[in-house]
Structure formats: structure tokens, C-alpha cells
Image (cartoon, rainbow, N blue to C red):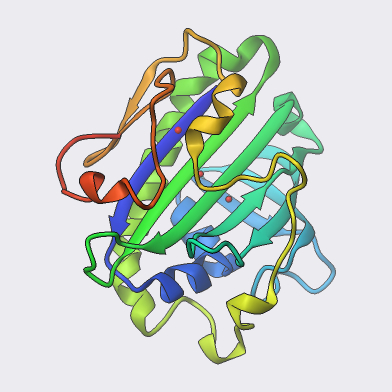
Length: 235
């Protein structure tokens, strides 16, 4: 199943990119629905690095969900300027073990309308075995909440992304290949991952159809989607 979201965030692309690398921002956009605690020896790093990061999740701060391994890849050297964080982690224990496929990709690029803001695209592909269809509304609702939080926080990222921005590595120095199936910013390429019965998604300003093979998120065409009118599958 798939959840797609697309939105214009009120911050520069560099600020959005730094925010996506911040564990503090990750925890804040998930809260209070999901609480996340690091299982690494030194706790959460100041910024995410490519690789594996074990965490423990709880719902509403008190209902244990289990342990999860976050597995991050980052792509920053595309010619079209799109920068992507991809999480292909897995559930390790508890209810999270039911998730048999997890592919979460977050892409940022400049608003094609030339506003100086950020075009943000979020795609989650997941499977939970026989519970895949019943669990889709849960993930859909969680991703709507994440988007609302991202929109709320984005203006503050101009100056503060929850960590010392001076410590961030230059984006051009982070590059990790996702392999032959590397995400290129076009959500539609992953249409084969979704069943035909997938219902449609909608956030406050964009509509993401889980069964729309014509979804086009190339930056050349995204200008038509940048208006705050309902149009359009996250960490």
C-alpha cells in the first residue's frame, strides 16, 4: 500500500534538508501520536547519518509498539536539485514486526514557482501481510498529522531546526546510493508496489491517489501543483 503527499513548505530548501536530517525534528513531527526513543549507546545523534539507527516506539507515549531499525540512505547529487532521504528499515519486535515492507522517501527541492520556498514530497510504501488493507487508514492518518506538523514547523527552520545548524555537513558531502531501484523523485515509478484496490488519500491542500498511475512529481511539472488548491502516497 502507498501514501503520497506533496506540499509547499514555508522555508528555503536548504533549511528543509537540514531539518530532515535532524532526529529532533523527526521526534517532534511524530509527537504526540508516536514517541520515539533511541537505543543507540549515545542516544540520538545531532544529525542523522546514513546507516542503521535502532529505536523504540510507543503510541501516545505509553503503549509499547516495539523496536524498529531505521535504515537511512541519502541522495544529494541529482542534477535537478532534488535531495532525498530514504528509510528502508524494519520492525524488530512487538507490533512493528508485522510490517514486512517499509520504504519511506522524503524529497525536497526548490518551489518551481520561484517563491524561494520548498517543494516537499513524501512517499510511504508499506505492507503488513494480511493486515495491509485494514492498516492503511492508520498510516494515512499518521502521515496527515506529520504533514500538519511539518507545515507548522517549517517557518522556524529558517533559523532553528532543533540542533546547531553550524554542525550540519554540507549537503553535497552526503551521498548514498539506493541501488538500481533508487528513487528519482518520481513517485509514479513505484506504482507496481501498490494493489489496485488502494484507496485515495487527501491532505488539506494536496490529494495523493494510491491508485493514480499518472502522478507526476517531476520538478518541471510541479509548478501546476504548487497552488494551495486540493490536488494530491512519510521517516
